[in-house]
Image (cartoon, rainbow, N blue to C red; front, side):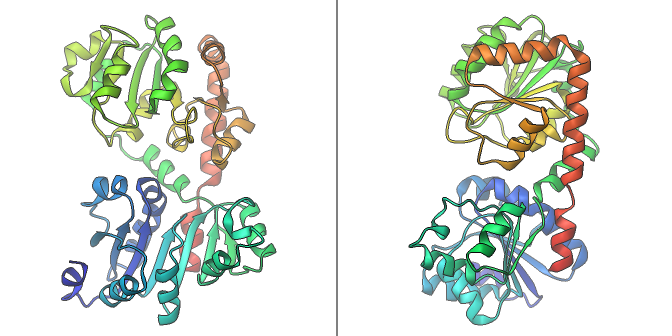
Length: 372
């Protein structure tokens, strides 16, 4: 199917690969910048995960969008025969042995952007020579931070530079873009009550969130976007505030004004919801790991999240700046939220710090494009 789609196309091509939706958001500003700089070049975008492909398979910023075939020698050769890229860009992760070996053999430059490395990874183990060899096939590695670059150089990988995280460019652009009309949300928040936006909530987040939502049900409004849209999870959320939760798909302007929690049983709106908020809770950190905090920070929202966040540099930075508060219990979350709700000057100070942080970190796309 890939070969047939590309057979009649003779324009030069660049191949971007993203594991999933999060990596797509990191690669998106680079693809858009490449399109502006090289309008005659076709962009081939591949995904590994259904959570990326299913959501972005019709994205107009790429000319061709496919799943990446499994990493075998035969697949790598057939794929590169079909695509014939002049450049391959892998976003953050995805170090596939056969694909990288074959790009190197053909003289196709292959780079990784927005990469983060840690000492405990397999590449840096005493027995990790094979895996370091995979990194050695890359023409260049653009890291998010200096620590990653230093670690690579200590292990003999010198085609490295620190460029930063392209996600800052995405979220900064989203915050500055003309807002998407959302009349139901506008009706929901029209009374001027403080708004808490809950992004990517998991079931594991509800024991900490539930008491807060019940205590402040009469004082705040809540926009809640679950990480997974399943009936069981939606029903579980509805039990937190019985009779006060309204699903977005069932809402009208009149019913939205009368609810206290608007529950988003669709995908694709979360990045737009943060502009309505004064506070944000980002899910995932009571489970395997924290979700995207930058979307909320780009709108200046003080953040709350669970304890599992140390692998996310931006979350570590936001905590150090005082813009974000990690919590381990419902009581801690209630206490931290109460302080900010009662002190508007403190909330606005944290807002300014978050905005400054996002805009100071932006610019990775331009730095990478200059080298590409």
